[in-house]
Image (tube, rainbow over all chains, first blue to last red; front, side, top):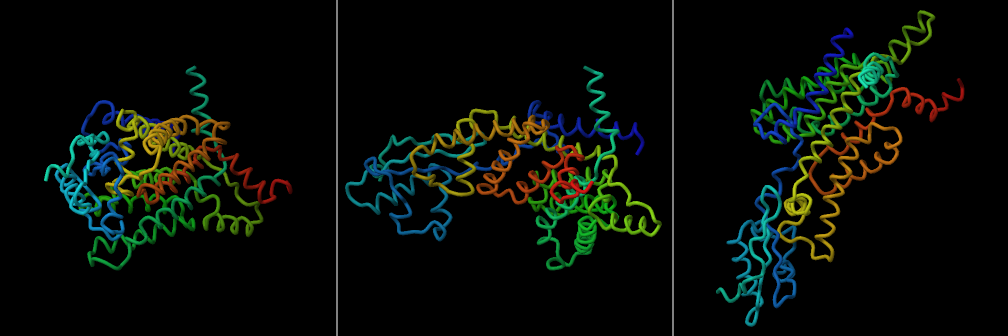
Length: 128
Length: 280
């Protein structure tokens, strides 16, 4: 490969590698040929972190229902929205029985992180 | 300034240097490729002529690249097979694993290695050249050549770190939320660990990841900084491997650190640890 070709290939490839991701990350252009290095960008969307408590005491859902994480059904392990979080809350209330006061801090995954959906403002057992 | 830049580019582009790093990259890449795709590209599975041709091509070219038989050609052919497979199985077949970032990085690195005289060291090509020289009563050919394309691998990895960090410069990542969502998705489902300091730890890890990525993007080019940054980079990649399903991305990135070193420095280090330097 001649010197000129070598210099041209190097400059063109280096410029493409270093600058092309800006098309997507900075300018927001749709460019299928460009690799923007936005790794795991869409991961975590559609799953919620749900922390239940009874009168302020944290609840271990697995211990309460006698389940093992590896064997638990998918819809038990993964709460994906407010409706399912409330349904799980009702199951917990039933399991604990009379006098339970179950609240949940629910944060759900969106493109830019976790959004708080429920912040313990409601006694899920009272909603029965 | 312009003169300094041109002088630096001339040192990179026009200088002949040791081919040992390029050969080590070739061997390492071939191994990473076999680990990544070997299980998928076998004669077990669909009896589809295109697939079977790709399977045969994959093993032929990758093994030739590994042992260094017509090394540059084998590396270029391996890149071609991966490219066609990524199109056939990823774009057309919808198998997402073929379109992941690490496949693109791997492909770029193999293409760059194919542009270096990577067969002049640690290869069947080298063995044959040495035997031919001995028969002719000549000294063995030097392990040197134009290795400019090796620097492109370092440029590519710098881009990966830099743009990976830029992508994380947003409140969601810096608060630790985005990383927590990824951990929920892959490790904890809807029950994050009930441990004190969990949120604070997420913030530290998230901010630390951005800081390390930016430091790697810039600092790996500097000899003094590499001493500290390479262990930090390895730690980062081990952590990523343990928490997220990145397959060979971690091993691949660490292997490509070799591209940041001066090839002659690597040559001397290998001589030194094998006692060759003392004999000279």
